[in-house]
Amino acid sequence: MAATSSAIAASGLAPEAPGAADRIPLGLRIGWATGSVGTVVILSTTSILLLYFMTSILGMAPALAGALLFGAKLFDAGIAPLVGRLSDRAATRWGRRRPFLFLGAIVSALAFLILFMPPAVGGLALSAWMTGGLLVLALGYTLFNVPYLAMPAEMTGSPQERTALLSFRVGFVAVGGALVGFAPQVAAALGGDRAAWAATGLLLGALVLAAMLVAFGASARARATAAMPGADRESLLIVLRNRPFMMLLLAKTLQLVGLAAMQASVLFFIVQVLGASESVVGVYVVATTLAMLVSMPLWVRLGRHHSKRSLFIAACLGYALAKLSFLVAMPGEPALLIHLRGIAGGLCTGGVLLMGQSILPDAIDWDCRRSGIRREGLYAGAYSLVEKASMALGPLLVGLLLSGFGFDPQAAKAGVAQAGAAVTGVYLGAAVLPALLYALSCVPLLFYRLDERSLATEARD
Image (cartoon, rainbow, N blue to C red; front, top):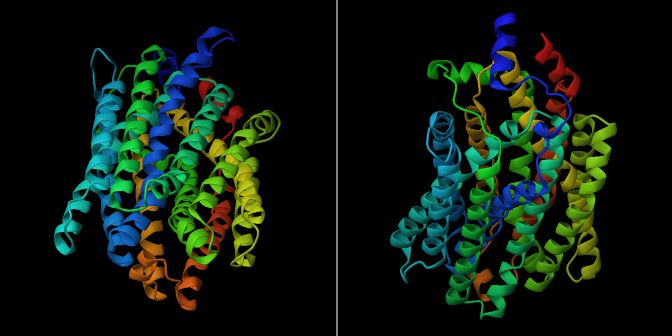
């Protein structure tokens, strides 16, 4: 272990004396975290808007739309490890992560132009156009997000400082999610037709570009590390041997499938099952967002006195109960009840996001402290692969559910009520599936054994 300890000290991984070295300035926290607005707009657009847009606006079959979204996510998942390895090895005057942030911003913005401005065609030609747009969006997102996820483990050696940093990220995630939540209302206000959705897509693309470029600029001041060698053939074994990381990965897989299923269903549920307007969707998302933001100081404070794992489990169970409450929601119920469910889910989502994002760099740092090798990009790529594959399953499952239960896209396009069986499929996607998967995600978290004391022990050994 002596050689390992020396390597750790040389790479800056050993705990430093209290002082400015591990502190992240407020301006850097805000600037870097702003990039999360861009990433969550992409994720929410994919999970919430595109299945609805492709079926109810463009008239595509739900199963076909879900399959296209699933295929694009698999492509996204496949390239994530490659982008991670490339960002580990890159040596430029902008550092090894930041060039990818810049390129990802440009490509992502271009994808919104393609997706929301398809030509006036149908059938195979429309499917091919949307497939191309989805692949471009997947590429842009991965180019930005994988290096972005790798940065917190480099920016500070303090687990508590990472929690504080990532609380800003979760806050901006909430803001980005709220903005996407208003997109259907904006499109409806502009006329609700294809031209209105094209204008809405352009606004979202401009938002993604601006947020990502802010993060690119702000991260010039972030602490970074140089690449250290590692054998490619050992990459998979390295990840598999990191038990804390694998337990987190399994839990996040279940959660992300559930989250994506809920997001893909929420527009159908509120508009076509409960009979509410698009404006109710916007207020629901705002209520959820505000609850997430308000909960951040509480979760950060709780994190100082309780283990991140325990808080993570509690938040997951709370979220599952909030989603199950949708089973008693009926058409015509007061909008206040819908928004109260959003508030309850938002309070728990804050804990799920913060604790999950906070223990991710801890699990990455655990490997760095043991080996003395900086390979944050490898882990960010592996995490991103699982994230994309899991988020791809959500729209696919919902698309199959809706088709299997007889959902009629032409009726949805015309504003006609769906048959009873189709409504049952929406309930399953919006309530039962997410609640079940979030509850199951608590099982692998019971085997997560990493805390701040463990990290400190690894550094001393």
